[in-house]
Image: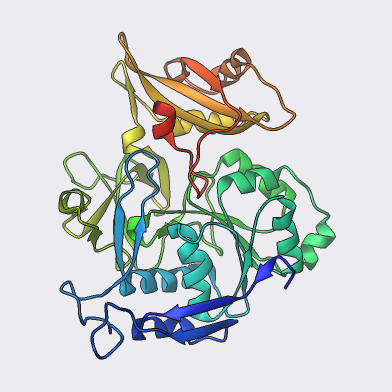
Amino acid sequence: MTKNLRGIEIISTGGAFEELARGRGKLRLYDNPSPLAGEGGALAPGEGDEAGQPVAAILYTSGTTGKPKGVVLTHDNLLSNARSCIDMFKVTRRDRFLLFLPMFHAFSFMVCLLLPLTVGASVIILRSVKPFSNVIKAVIFGRASFFIAIPPVYNLLSMRRFPRLILRLLPLRLCVSGAAPLSQDTLARWGKNYPIPLLEGYGLTEASPVVSCNPLDGARKPGSVGLPLPGVEARILSEDGSELPRGQVGEIAVRGPNVMREYLNAPEATAETLKNGWLHTGDLGRIDVDGYIFIVDRKKDLIISHGMNIYPREIEEALYAHPAVRQAAVVGVLDEGRGEVPKAFVSLHEGRAATEKELKSFLKERLALYKLPRRVVFMDALPTNAAGKILKKELKK
Protein backbone atom coordinates (compact mmCIF):
# COMPACT_ATOMS: atom_id res chain seq x y z
CA MET A 1 0.00 0.00 0.00
CA THR A 2 1.07 3.58 -0.64
CA LYS A 3 1.33 6.23 2.05
CA ASN A 4 -2.16 7.51 1.16
CA LEU A 5 -3.82 4.12 1.73
CA ARG A 6 -5.16 2.55 4.89
CA GLY A 7 -6.21 -0.91 5.99
CA ILE A 8 -9.62 -1.75 7.38
CA GLU A 9 -10.95 -2.68 10.80
CA ILE A 10 -14.48 -4.05 11.10
CA ILE A 11 -16.59 -3.99 14.24
CA SER A 12 -19.20 -6.75 14.28
CA THR A 13 -22.62 -6.05 15.78
CA GLY A 14 -23.29 -9.72 16.20
CA GLY A 15 -23.70 -13.07 14.54
CA ALA A 16 -25.55 -11.73 11.51
CA PHE A 17 -22.36 -10.00 10.37
CA GLU A 18 -20.05 -12.99 10.88
CA GLU A 19 -20.75 -14.11 7.32
CA LEU A 20 -19.16 -10.90 6.06
CA ALA A 21 -15.82 -11.83 7.59
CA ARG A 22 -15.45 -15.50 6.61
CA GLY A 23 -13.09 -14.71 3.71
CA ARG A 24 -9.42 -13.97 3.96
CA GLY A 25 -9.49 -10.28 3.22
CA LYS A 26 -7.16 -7.87 4.96
CA LEU A 27 -9.39 -6.98 7.89
CA ARG A 28 -9.58 -7.41 11.64
CA LEU A 29 -12.86 -8.43 13.25
CA TYR A 30 -13.87 -7.28 16.69
CA ASP A 31 -16.82 -8.86 18.50
CA ASN A 32 -18.75 -5.88 19.80
CA PRO A 33 -22.36 -6.86 20.59
CA SER A 34 -24.94 -4.24 19.68
CA PRO A 35 -26.48 -2.27 22.56
CA LEU A 36 -29.82 -3.24 21.00
CA ALA A 37 -29.12 -6.93 21.63
CA GLY A 38 -30.54 -8.80 24.59
CA GLU A 39 -28.63 -10.58 27.34
CA GLY A 40 -27.53 -13.25 24.88
CA GLY A 41 -25.54 -10.72 22.86
CA ALA A 42 -26.00 -10.75 19.10
CA LEU A 43 -29.29 -10.31 17.28
CA ALA A 44 -29.63 -13.47 15.20
CA PRO A 45 -31.73 -13.33 12.00
CA GLY A 46 -35.43 -13.49 12.81
CA GLU A 47 -34.99 -12.73 16.53
CA GLY A 48 -35.52 -9.61 18.60
CA ASP A 49 -37.46 -7.75 15.92
CA GLU A 50 -41.19 -7.55 15.35
CA ALA A 51 -40.84 -7.58 11.56
CA GLY A 52 -38.65 -10.72 11.55
CA GLN A 53 -35.23 -9.47 10.45
CA PRO A 54 -33.28 -7.12 12.74
CA VAL A 55 -32.28 -3.75 11.37
CA ALA A 56 -28.75 -3.68 9.94
CA ALA A 57 -28.57 -0.06 8.80
CA ILE A 58 -30.57 3.11 8.32
CA LEU A 59 -29.27 4.90 5.24
CA TYR A 60 -30.63 8.21 4.03
CA THR A 61 -31.79 9.03 0.51
CA SER A 62 -29.79 11.62 -1.39
CA GLY A 63 -32.45 14.32 -1.13
CA THR A 64 -31.75 15.72 -4.62
CA THR A 65 -35.42 16.58 -5.21
CA GLY A 66 -36.85 16.63 -1.67
CA LYS A 67 -36.15 16.03 2.01
CA PRO A 68 -33.94 12.94 2.68
CA LYS A 69 -35.74 9.93 4.18
CA GLY A 70 -34.28 7.25 6.44
CA VAL A 71 -34.34 3.86 4.67
CA VAL A 72 -34.56 0.92 7.06
CA LEU A 73 -32.52 -2.03 5.71
CA THR A 74 -32.23 -5.49 7.26
CA HIS A 75 -29.32 -7.93 7.26
CA ASP A 76 -31.08 -9.99 4.58
CA ASN A 77 -31.53 -6.89 2.40
CA LEU A 78 -27.82 -6.11 2.43
CA LEU A 79 -26.48 -9.65 2.22
CA SER A 80 -28.79 -10.59 -0.66
CA ASN A 81 -27.68 -7.52 -2.61
CA ALA A 82 -24.00 -8.27 -1.90
CA ARG A 83 -24.39 -11.86 -3.14
CA SER A 84 -26.18 -10.71 -6.30
CA CYS A 85 -23.43 -8.17 -7.04
CA ILE A 86 -20.78 -10.87 -6.53
CA ASP A 87 -22.51 -13.02 -9.14
CA MET A 88 -22.96 -10.12 -11.55
CA PHE A 89 -19.37 -8.79 -11.31
CA LYS A 90 -17.65 -12.16 -10.75
CA VAL A 91 -15.89 -10.89 -7.63
CA THR A 92 -13.27 -13.07 -5.92
CA ARG A 93 -11.12 -12.60 -2.81
CA ARG A 94 -8.19 -11.72 -5.10
CA ASP A 95 -9.88 -8.46 -6.11
CA ARG A 96 -8.72 -5.12 -4.73
CA PHE A 97 -11.38 -2.39 -4.49
CA LEU A 98 -10.52 1.31 -4.51
CA LEU A 99 -12.73 3.29 -2.12
CA PHE A 100 -12.81 7.08 -2.32
CA LEU A 101 -16.56 7.79 -2.35
CA PRO A 102 -18.34 8.69 0.91
CA MET A 103 -18.89 5.53 2.96
CA PHE A 104 -22.30 6.70 4.18
CA HIS A 105 -23.68 6.69 0.63
CA ALA A 106 -25.63 3.52 -0.23
CA PHE A 107 -23.71 2.91 -3.49
CA SER A 108 -20.22 2.97 -1.99
CA PHE A 109 -21.39 1.35 1.26
CA MET A 110 -22.53 -1.71 -0.69
CA VAL A 111 -20.16 -1.97 -3.65
CA CYS A 112 -16.97 -0.70 -1.99
CA LEU A 113 -17.41 -2.18 1.50
CA LEU A 114 -19.98 -4.94 2.00
CA LEU A 115 -19.37 -6.59 -1.36
CA PRO A 116 -15.58 -7.07 -0.95
CA LEU A 117 -15.94 -7.99 2.72
CA THR A 118 -18.46 -10.70 1.89
CA VAL A 119 -15.86 -12.55 -0.19
CA GLY A 120 -12.81 -11.42 1.81
CA ALA A 121 -11.38 -9.16 -0.89
CA SER A 122 -9.10 -6.19 -0.11
CA VAL A 123 -10.26 -2.58 0.10
CA ILE A 124 -7.93 0.35 -0.57
CA ILE A 125 -9.19 3.47 1.19
CA LEU A 126 -8.04 6.76 -0.30
CA ARG A 127 -7.84 9.59 2.21
CA SER A 128 -8.48 12.36 -0.28
CA VAL A 129 -9.15 12.78 -4.00
CA LYS A 130 -7.50 16.20 -3.99
CA PRO A 131 -5.49 16.58 -6.05
CA PHE A 132 -7.20 14.22 -8.50
CA SER A 133 -3.84 12.64 -9.30
CA ASN A 134 -4.23 10.82 -5.96
CA VAL A 135 -6.87 8.64 -7.59
CA ILE A 136 -4.56 7.72 -10.48
CA LYS A 137 -1.69 6.94 -8.08
CA ALA A 138 -3.97 4.74 -5.95
CA VAL A 139 -5.00 2.71 -8.99
CA ILE A 140 -1.40 2.20 -10.09
CA PHE A 141 0.44 1.74 -6.78
CA GLY A 142 -2.47 0.15 -4.92
CA ARG A 143 -2.84 -2.38 -7.76
CA ALA A 144 -6.63 -1.93 -7.81
CA SER A 145 -8.61 -4.42 -9.87
CA PHE A 146 -12.11 -3.01 -9.27
CA PHE A 147 -12.79 0.72 -9.73
CA ILE A 148 -16.09 2.27 -8.61
CA ALA A 149 -16.89 5.92 -9.28
CA ILE A 150 -19.57 8.41 -10.21
CA PRO A 151 -20.12 9.88 -13.73
CA PRO A 152 -18.15 13.15 -13.19
CA VAL A 153 -15.03 11.08 -12.44
CA TYR A 154 -15.43 9.02 -15.61
CA ASN A 155 -16.16 12.16 -17.60
CA LEU A 156 -12.83 13.60 -16.44
CA LEU A 157 -10.90 10.36 -17.00
CA SER A 158 -12.41 9.80 -20.46
CA MET A 159 -10.72 12.98 -21.67
CA ARG A 160 -7.27 11.68 -20.68
CA ARG A 161 -5.19 9.12 -22.47
CA PHE A 162 -2.72 6.75 -20.88
CA PRO A 163 -0.20 4.55 -22.74
CA ARG A 164 -1.80 1.23 -23.67
CA LEU A 165 1.23 -0.64 -22.32
CA ILE A 166 0.68 0.79 -18.82
CA LEU A 167 -3.03 -0.07 -18.97
CA ARG A 168 -2.22 -3.66 -19.96
CA LEU A 169 0.20 -4.05 -17.05
CA LEU A 170 -2.36 -2.92 -14.49
CA PRO A 171 -4.56 -5.55 -12.79
CA LEU A 172 -7.57 -3.22 -13.25
CA ARG A 173 -10.24 -5.44 -14.81
CA LEU A 174 -13.53 -3.64 -14.27
CA CYS A 175 -15.01 -0.17 -13.76
CA VAL A 176 -18.55 0.47 -12.56
CA SER A 177 -20.50 3.73 -12.66
CA GLY A 178 -23.45 4.50 -10.43
CA ALA A 179 -25.30 7.05 -8.26
CA ALA A 180 -26.19 9.25 -11.28
CA PRO A 181 -26.76 8.93 -15.06
CA LEU A 182 -23.66 8.28 -17.18
CA SER A 183 -23.53 10.37 -20.34
CA GLN A 184 -23.43 8.33 -23.55
CA ASP A 185 -20.80 10.74 -24.82
CA THR A 186 -18.59 9.91 -21.81
CA LEU A 187 -19.14 6.19 -22.38
CA ALA A 188 -18.18 6.52 -26.05
CA ARG A 189 -14.95 8.41 -25.23
CA TRP A 190 -14.10 5.82 -22.57
CA GLY A 191 -14.45 3.00 -25.10
CA LYS A 192 -12.01 4.76 -27.45
CA ASN A 193 -9.35 5.48 -24.81
CA TYR A 194 -9.50 2.46 -22.49
CA PRO A 195 -9.62 -1.32 -23.01
CA ILE A 196 -11.25 -1.77 -19.58
CA PRO A 197 -15.02 -2.44 -19.40
CA LEU A 198 -17.09 0.41 -17.95
CA LEU A 199 -20.46 -0.85 -16.77
CA GLU A 200 -23.33 1.49 -15.91
CA GLY A 201 -25.72 0.35 -13.24
CA TYR A 202 -28.89 1.56 -11.58
CA GLY A 203 -30.07 1.55 -8.02
CA LEU A 204 -31.62 3.46 -5.16
CA THR A 205 -31.15 3.41 -1.42
CA GLU A 206 -34.50 1.67 -0.98
CA ALA A 207 -33.13 -1.33 -2.93
CA SER A 208 -29.95 -1.77 -0.83
CA PRO A 209 -29.12 -0.16 -3.43
CA VAL A 210 -28.22 -2.04 -6.66
CA VAL A 211 -31.09 -3.00 -8.98
CA SER A 212 -29.43 -3.60 -12.34
CA CYS A 213 -26.20 -3.35 -14.30
CA ASN A 214 -24.91 -4.02 -17.77
CA PRO A 215 -23.41 -7.53 -17.78
CA LEU A 216 -19.69 -8.14 -17.64
CA ASP A 217 -20.10 -10.98 -20.13
CA GLY A 218 -22.78 -10.31 -22.71
CA ALA A 219 -24.33 -7.41 -24.58
CA ARG A 220 -23.91 -3.92 -23.16
CA LYS A 221 -26.43 -1.52 -24.59
CA PRO A 222 -25.51 2.20 -24.69
CA GLY A 223 -28.06 4.26 -22.80
CA SER A 224 -29.20 1.25 -20.80
CA VAL A 225 -28.58 0.49 -17.13
CA GLY A 226 -28.54 -3.20 -17.96
CA LEU A 227 -30.34 -6.26 -16.64
CA PRO A 228 -31.79 -6.78 -13.15
CA LEU A 229 -29.43 -8.50 -10.71
CA PRO A 230 -29.98 -12.21 -9.99
CA GLY A 231 -33.02 -12.55 -7.75
CA VAL A 232 -34.36 -9.06 -8.59
CA GLU A 233 -37.44 -8.40 -10.73
CA ALA A 234 -38.36 -5.20 -12.55
CA ARG A 235 -41.48 -4.11 -14.39
CA ILE A 236 -42.92 -0.92 -15.92
CA LEU A 237 -46.19 0.39 -14.50
CA SER A 238 -48.82 2.80 -15.82
CA GLU A 239 -50.41 5.54 -13.72
CA ASP A 240 -53.13 3.10 -12.56
CA GLY A 241 -50.53 0.54 -11.44
CA SER A 242 -51.03 -1.96 -14.27
CA GLU A 243 -48.00 -3.46 -16.05
CA LEU A 244 -47.12 -1.92 -19.41
CA PRO A 245 -45.88 -3.87 -22.46
CA ARG A 246 -42.20 -3.97 -23.35
CA GLY A 247 -40.94 -0.74 -24.87
CA GLN A 248 -43.50 1.58 -23.29
CA VAL A 249 -42.49 4.27 -20.80
CA GLY A 250 -43.83 4.19 -17.25
CA GLU A 251 -42.72 4.03 -13.63
CA ILE A 252 -40.09 1.42 -12.79
CA ALA A 253 -41.13 -0.98 -10.02
CA VAL A 254 -38.76 -3.44 -8.33
CA ARG A 255 -39.27 -6.59 -6.28
CA GLY A 256 -36.70 -8.75 -4.50
CA PRO A 257 -35.02 -9.60 -1.19
CA ASN A 258 -33.02 -6.36 -1.48
CA VAL A 259 -36.09 -4.11 -1.13
CA MET A 260 -36.19 -2.09 2.09
CA ARG A 261 -38.43 -2.84 5.04
CA GLU A 262 -39.77 0.71 5.46
CA TYR A 263 -38.98 4.40 5.78
CA LEU A 264 -38.02 5.40 9.30
CA ASN A 265 -41.01 6.87 11.18
CA ALA A 266 -42.84 7.56 7.91
CA PRO A 267 -45.73 5.10 7.47
CA GLU A 268 -47.51 7.22 4.83
CA ALA A 269 -44.39 7.51 2.67
CA THR A 270 -43.79 3.77 3.12
CA ALA A 271 -47.35 2.90 2.00
CA GLU A 272 -46.96 5.19 -1.02
CA THR A 273 -43.68 3.54 -2.08
CA LEU A 274 -44.25 -0.14 -1.18
CA LYS A 275 -47.37 -1.56 -2.83
CA ASN A 276 -48.25 -5.26 -3.10
CA GLY A 277 -44.63 -6.25 -2.54
CA TRP A 278 -43.31 -3.91 -5.24
CA LEU A 279 -41.05 -0.90 -4.69
CA HIS A 280 -42.29 2.06 -6.75
CA THR A 281 -39.04 3.84 -7.58
CA GLY A 282 -40.32 7.19 -8.84
CA ASP A 283 -38.13 6.72 -11.94
CA LEU A 284 -39.58 6.67 -15.44
CA GLY A 285 -38.18 4.12 -17.85
CA ARG A 286 -38.79 1.29 -20.25
CA ILE A 287 -37.71 -2.34 -20.62
CA ASP A 288 -36.81 -3.65 -24.07
CA VAL A 289 -37.54 -7.09 -25.52
CA ASP A 290 -34.25 -8.42 -24.11
CA GLY A 291 -35.06 -7.29 -20.57
CA TYR A 292 -32.65 -4.31 -20.50
CA ILE A 293 -33.78 -1.31 -18.47
CA PHE A 294 -33.57 2.22 -19.90
CA ILE A 295 -34.02 5.16 -17.53
CA VAL A 296 -35.91 8.08 -19.05
CA ASP A 297 -36.05 10.46 -16.08
CA ARG A 298 -37.27 11.04 -12.56
CA LYS A 299 -41.06 11.13 -12.39
CA LYS A 300 -40.90 14.33 -10.32
CA ASP A 301 -38.60 15.98 -12.89
CA LEU A 302 -40.98 15.50 -15.84
CA ILE A 303 -41.79 18.82 -17.56
CA ILE A 304 -45.22 19.20 -19.20
CA SER A 305 -45.26 22.04 -21.73
CA HIS A 306 -48.43 22.66 -23.79
CA GLY A 307 -49.46 19.09 -22.95
CA MET A 308 -46.19 17.66 -24.30
CA ASN A 309 -43.89 15.58 -22.07
CA ILE A 310 -40.31 16.85 -21.88
CA TYR A 311 -37.70 14.69 -20.15
CA PRO A 312 -34.84 16.81 -18.71
CA ARG A 313 -32.41 13.92 -18.99
CA GLU A 314 -32.70 13.98 -22.81
CA ILE A 315 -31.71 17.67 -22.85
CA GLU A 316 -28.89 17.04 -20.37
CA GLU A 317 -27.52 14.22 -22.57
CA ALA A 318 -27.45 16.62 -25.53
CA LEU A 319 -25.66 19.26 -23.46
CA TYR A 320 -23.02 16.77 -22.29
CA ALA A 321 -22.22 16.05 -25.94
CA HIS A 322 -20.78 19.58 -26.22
CA PRO A 323 -17.02 19.43 -25.55
CA ALA A 324 -17.06 22.51 -23.26
CA VAL A 325 -19.78 21.28 -20.88
CA ARG A 326 -18.64 19.74 -17.59
CA GLN A 327 -21.95 19.68 -15.68
CA ALA A 328 -25.52 20.05 -16.91
CA ALA A 329 -28.93 20.03 -15.29
CA VAL A 330 -32.37 20.97 -16.57
CA VAL A 331 -35.40 21.91 -14.46
CA GLY A 332 -38.91 23.05 -15.28
CA VAL A 333 -39.94 26.64 -14.55
CA LEU A 334 -43.46 28.09 -14.66
CA ASP A 335 -44.61 29.82 -17.83
CA GLU A 336 -48.02 31.48 -18.18
CA GLY A 337 -48.54 30.44 -21.79
CA ARG A 338 -47.03 26.92 -21.80
CA GLY A 339 -47.43 25.72 -18.22
CA GLU A 340 -43.75 24.87 -17.82
CA VAL A 341 -40.62 25.39 -19.88
CA PRO A 342 -37.15 23.83 -19.49
CA LYS A 343 -34.32 25.92 -18.06
CA ALA A 344 -30.72 24.67 -18.27
CA PHE A 345 -27.84 25.18 -15.84
CA VAL A 346 -24.30 24.37 -16.95
CA SER A 347 -20.70 24.62 -15.81
CA LEU A 348 -17.81 24.44 -18.24
CA HIS A 349 -14.53 22.58 -18.28
CA GLU A 350 -11.57 24.63 -17.17
CA GLY A 351 -10.06 26.45 -20.11
CA ARG A 352 -13.14 25.95 -22.32
CA ALA A 353 -15.63 28.62 -23.40
CA ALA A 354 -19.19 28.68 -24.70
CA THR A 355 -22.06 31.16 -24.94
CA GLU A 356 -25.78 30.74 -24.39
CA LYS A 357 -26.40 31.34 -28.09
CA GLU A 358 -23.81 28.71 -29.05
CA LEU A 359 -25.31 26.06 -26.75
CA LYS A 360 -28.84 26.77 -27.95
CA SER A 361 -27.71 26.39 -31.58
CA PHE A 362 -25.94 23.14 -30.61
CA LEU A 363 -29.13 21.81 -28.99
CA LYS A 364 -31.30 22.89 -31.91
CA GLU A 365 -29.50 20.38 -34.12
CA ARG A 366 -30.26 17.55 -31.67
CA LEU A 367 -33.66 18.26 -30.14
CA ALA A 368 -37.20 19.10 -31.19
CA LEU A 369 -37.98 22.81 -30.91
CA TYR A 370 -40.44 22.40 -28.03
CA LYS A 371 -37.69 20.74 -25.94
CA LEU A 372 -35.21 23.59 -26.24
CA PRO A 373 -34.41 25.38 -22.94
CA ARG A 374 -35.84 28.87 -22.67
CA ARG A 375 -32.62 29.95 -20.91
CA VAL A 376 -29.13 28.58 -20.30
CA VAL A 377 -27.53 29.76 -17.06
CA PHE A 378 -23.77 29.46 -16.54
CA MET A 379 -22.36 28.65 -13.09
CA ASP A 380 -18.83 27.99 -11.85
CA ALA A 381 -20.10 24.69 -10.40
CA LEU A 382 -23.55 23.19 -9.97
CA PRO A 383 -24.62 22.35 -6.39
CA THR A 384 -24.06 18.70 -5.54
CA ASN A 385 -24.34 16.41 -2.54
CA ALA A 386 -21.46 14.38 -1.09
CA ALA A 387 -21.98 11.62 -3.65
CA GLY A 388 -21.71 14.01 -6.59
CA LYS A 389 -25.42 14.12 -7.48
CA ILE A 390 -26.62 17.48 -8.74
CA LEU A 391 -29.15 19.03 -6.34
CA LYS A 392 -31.98 20.14 -8.62
CA LYS A 393 -34.02 21.36 -5.65
CA GLU A 394 -31.34 24.02 -5.11
CA LEU A 395 -31.43 25.01 -8.76
CA LYS A 396 -35.22 25.36 -8.67
CA LYS A 397 -34.85 27.85 -5.83
